[in-house]
Amino acid sequence: MSGPAESKIEIKGVKVYLHKKDPLTRSRILHIDIESPVLNRIIKDGESTYCAGKPGGVFIGLRSEMIKRAEEIVGKKAAKPPSSKL
Image (cartoon, rainbow, N blue to C red; front, side, top):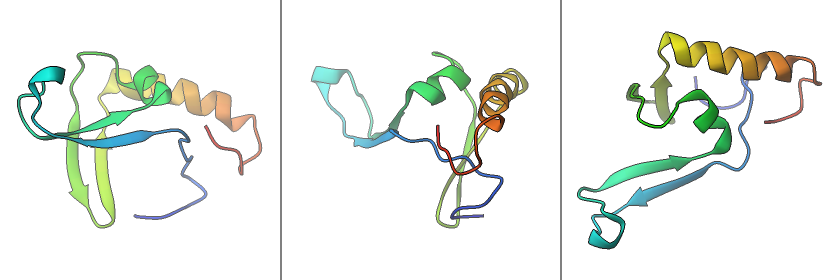
């Protein structure tokens, strides 16, 4: 599902880049960079996961250890009003 929903928590401050091939940054192929402190707490450096296109965006699946970390973040978030954002 694309767009807002009560069961979704918006992550503020996410930067998304289309990163071209560039020897100065050691980028060997065109790819997408998604940068966010919140996402780095869920998906640790070097971990891999599943990504697929969906209508209106992209779906990133999480492995069980990533889900546990995300649930900790959501648990802290649940104590705040539903309209607040990460």
